[in-house]
Length: 74
Ligand code: F3S
Image (tube, rainbow, N blue to C red; front, top):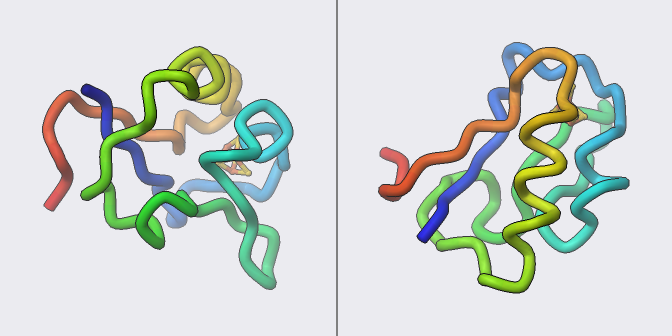
């Protein structure tokens, strides 16, 4: 299983993650990304059929703000 959240302290609102993984990430009013799976808590595992998107976003984020983990965050 994979869990994910966005580090909003380092996100620069580049917009890549939501384009690559629209079922996982969206943007707040300031354009900063967050996980829509669980309001960026990293508590809900990413569905298997979105893992490829998850990896694409993780590898593409220019500031490494897409965090992934095998255990839930927090
Ligand atoms: Fe932010 Fe990285 Fe997404 S900079 S908008 S978390 S690709």
